[in-house]
Image (cartoon, rainbow, N blue to C red):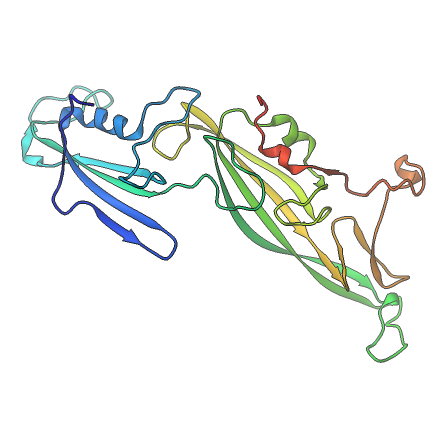
Amino acid sequence: MSRITFQELSGSPEETFTTDDFAAVRKFLVPWADRNDFVDWLRGATNAFGPRETIAYPNRPDVTPYKILIKPFDAASLEKTSMDSLSNSLNQYSSYALITVYYGIQTSQDLEEGPTAESGTRLTYRINFQIQEVDINGAGLYWHGSTTSLGANASVVKTVPLTEHILTWKQVLFPPWTAMRELQGKVNSVEFLDCPPGTLLYEGVGVNKLFRSDLQDGASEFCWQLEYRFLQRIIYQGSSRFGWNAVYRKETGKWENVVLGKSAGYTLNSGTPFYESGDFNALFVSEMN
C-alpha cells in the first residue's frame, strides 16, 4: 500500500447518525492507474476459503465499506488513444480517480434470538404474515349464554393467523445439505425463534450460488446464500397453546393434538405425532464442522 498515494478531499467525511444506525461517506483522490489497487487494499485480502480483512472506518470497527464508486476526477485529462476492444480496453486518464466510499454498520446477524451466525457469515431476518381458514363443525359450538349447539350442519370458519419467519444465511461455504433435506416438513422439537415446540414448520430453503463481484456477494470467490422459511402456527385455547399437530374436535369443541394410528402403519395410540419434529439449529451449522 505504501506505493499508492491518495488524498482525502476537503469536506470528507460526511457522517449520518440516526437513533439506531450510523453511516458515512468518504471521498479520495487516487492516481487513475492505482484505483483498483486502492480498492483491493480497502476491501482487504481474501482467498477462496477465507473472509476479507476490510479496512474499517476510523475508531469504528463495526463500520465497514459496503459500496465503492469510482469515476474520473477530471474528464478533460482523457488520454485520446484508440480502443480496439470493448471487453479489454478502457479509457485512460492522466489525472486522478475520484473514489467515493460508502460505510455502514455491518452486523453478523439481525436477530439476537435464534441461531448464531458462524464466523465469516451473516444472518438476516425478515417476517411475513399469512392466514389459514379452518372449517369448524358447529356441533361443538354453542350460542353464548345458551346450551343450544349450533348443530352439526352449521359450518363456521375460524381464521388462524400464521407468521412466516425468513432467515437468510449469507456467505456460507459449506451448506448443511443433509439437515436441509432431512428437516424439511418437520416442526421444531425445541424452542426456536421464541416459538414453543411444535408451533414452527420448516417449509424449505431457497439456495443461490454467488460469485463475488462486489462487497456484498460474500466472503470468498464463491459462496452460498440460503433462504430458510419457517411457518409459525399458534392456536390459543385458554391457557393452552397448540401448534401444527392440533385439529379441532367437534365432539369436545376443543383443539386437540392428533397422532398416527394403524392405517399409517403405527400401533394405535403409539403417540407418533402427525408432524415429525427436529432441531432446527442444525440448519445453521456448516456440514464440514
